[in-house]
Image (cartoon, rainbow, N blue to C red):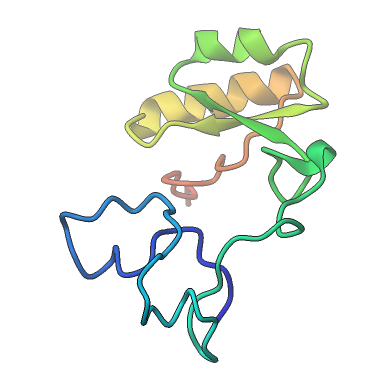
Length: 118
């Protein structure tokens, strides 16, 4: 019964938008705060502004599609980490990881889809 961040019962109906809307029904169990139901958002559930948009290691993430995109992170390598896009193939991934190591840019998913050579 923690706060889920999406609209009550939006997982059950495709026609319902998952964005949060306050339940207003007279019998609604979420509005009435019954035990075991999802919580409604409240002040105090947020995080402090310094931690916003940061991952667990304190970096903001930037999606990289090619080697040239790494140049954008050159001055920000202490604050922003690269994340290789999910459509990037294995060969380009290796190039991106190598170049990032030269520029000392952190790559969050650098080991993904790269086999160890025997």
